Length: 318
Length: 306
Ligand SMILES: Nc1ncnc2c1ncn2[C@@H]1O[C@H](COP(=O)(O)OP(=O)(O)OP(=O)(O)O)[C@@H](O)[C@H]1O
Ligand SMILES: [Mg+2]
Image (tube, rainbow over all chains, first blue to last red; front, side, top):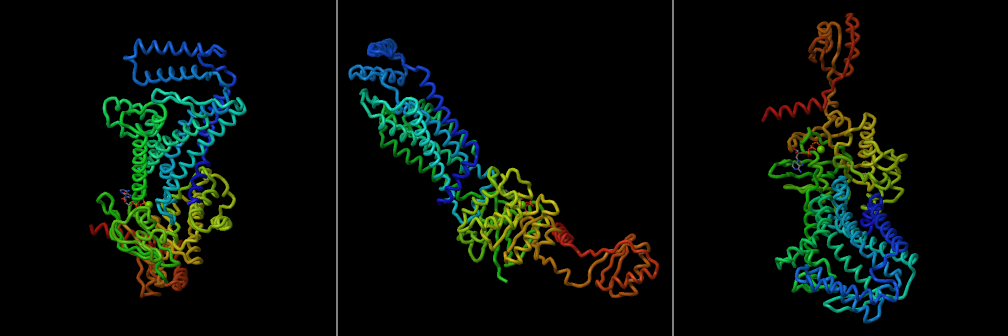
């Protein structure tokens, strides 16, 4: 099994596309770092002792907006306004300036939005890892050795996971090192977390762990779906295209459906974003963390079962 | 000799069409078995079933006593095969391809890999990327790949496809050597008859998914008398001389060509006689009835029967 995984790993890293992906990821981090260092990206808040006034002005303007057109605003816009107001109020009350030192951990946190990018690359690998063997005709080589088809497929799936984790690890380490070099290690700014109308403080490290692990779940689910399509339909473009489309649009579509129908909560994309239980509000009433976890497990098993059954049964012809 | 591969009444149905119809044959240790048939006869399909790439609708295939259906891993362990074209990872070098493949079998050392590379004559280019290889080099690499784990059964689907005469000859020599020296049972498919004749011990002819006949290639030679074609300027007179010298054999005139059946020793006697009679001889050629003739004979008979 180990040597099979190593084989898959070698095949991924013998292709230039892989390095392009990694290069893009690191490049974006580097550019963002340079930008933040040399471009003074400050918020709308004055950088001096006046920050409280600035925040208060922001609160007032959002509040006015809410009062004037509160009923016309979409639910999520309204919520985001309320969140800004609550966090600003918390800052003023507890004397936490938004102009605190920008340091390595803040940079990692800002760069964590690139986890989606890593997910994208994970999908590309997952969508290609089985289908490409069919395209190249090399699937024949793999299947005429004394190794069961399930083992071949499993080794490929594990490789996809390893690749995904490696990308996240790389992202974390690289943004950490770059953050340290550019911004140094500052005092520990807490992360302000807003849920159910209450603001809570959370240590930055804990926040980062949360972000990385919860985002991984979404990446894994989408990659598993791409992997399933790849092994069931032998088409990497279908697997990659559909998965990426759903990655970007799946949430929106589910949101639209959720406005009218309650069954939207059974959709995969209503459940991939587990942040809704830690920050913000669940997409639909009645959804709980347990519900989502069970749904995710069910989807995961369905994807795997389809992939394995079809791959095992299939006649390899042509 | 022991039967290594046993095809037992195998049928393959794809989309309600019988692609292979109750096929049965055996391949012995140290034997080169030719699998001959026109395009679309079902050669590749049969090979795919032997190596477990596609399922078997009816019947069974056993390799060294292990069924490929119920005991696949044991059965396939001793098989090395190229199905259709030798497919490789083009973005890796030949050596990396072999290493990749070696990792899927137990205990193949780097020395073994290099030894195999040497055997197929690819040492010089083995570290180049496969995408820079010619077709002939890819065939060699494919052969090396099948041989890495010292298989007892070697299956090559149209191994000479696209090769030049030198390449064809080389493959032929390799195949014969592997069967003779290493006792492998070799199955070679082709639609090139002349080639089968030179490479194989026995040839099974398949058409439309049915095995029509199995022939020993060297049967004819053992008979003694051979067919000859002789171009002369006076064929009729030449035929009289034949009738005088070897009355037991019949001769026939076709244009300026004399067709006859004779023992090898009769030929110099005949030549002396013709020279004595003042007949000019332009060409003497042995025309053993080729497998091709037999193949066409059999397949046309088959067609007429329909
Ligand atoms: N997956 C498939 N679906 C439907 N028909 C198939 C399939 N695979 C093969 N066939 C049919 O089975 C028959 C035998 O095909 P096969 O490839 O075994 O022929 P072959 O003897 O190898 O021919 P060639 O000399 O051209 O390689 C053909 O008529 C082909 O159309
Ligand atoms: Mg074929």
